[in-house]
Length: 124
Image (cartoon, rainbow, N blue to C red; front, side, top):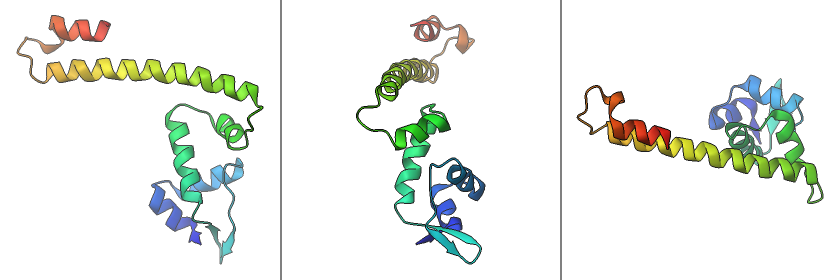
């Protein structure tokens, strides 16, 4: 068993975030050790999933639905397809920015932001 402070330390989340996730139904504690909530070690895996989904732009409500989804949840599957397209766009944008910054790190054009190759990479 892990108490709330241990879970917070291992995940980098504030205890208040863990309590919030519990209130929203994303987590459940397995009891208390004195005044502190306790969790099964598997909570760390669930929090990795929640963190990944949050960073991908899913809302708390969407994550909640995802955690209880069944193969027949067509609306959720459609949302996942939309999210894949959004993530593909984000990845492409970030790759363009990465390429632009990589070029700018060695470019001798003055000023750097006026470099034609830098501008082209951003436009692509």
